[in-house]
Length: 138
Image (cartoon, rainbow, N blue to C red; front, side, top):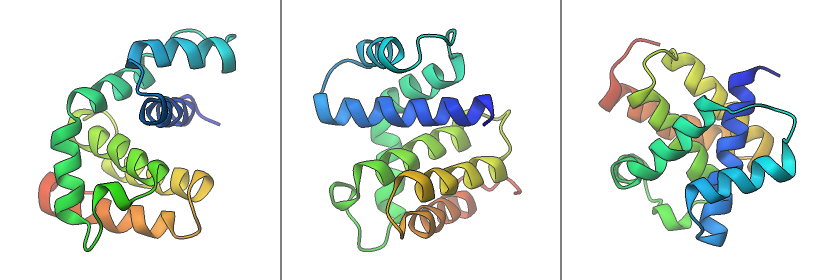
């Protein structure tokens, strides 16, 4: 598994924990790192995504709600919602990551950690955001 994929998985775990426990982002990062990946060094990409999603959450959530037909954010699973947040942050603020890579990684995370429908659900929303907001070529 690639380093960026591990970073995305770690970011997903932290964002999930933040929704459940309501603790601070930095505290959650430290706690998960100590308990589940003590052998690895600092993961700047994961930290950038986590803090970036938290800082821009209102903007990202607005984009999700505007492009998810008949789905309010609070009706989405925590996993799907946070995968979307990570991917949208990447699309908007990580220009070094090709949009196609971001979409594929988000869909794969949905298939691995979400429900049977997560991959197609995530793909549909991200495709709309990519075409209507980002407009970078895949």
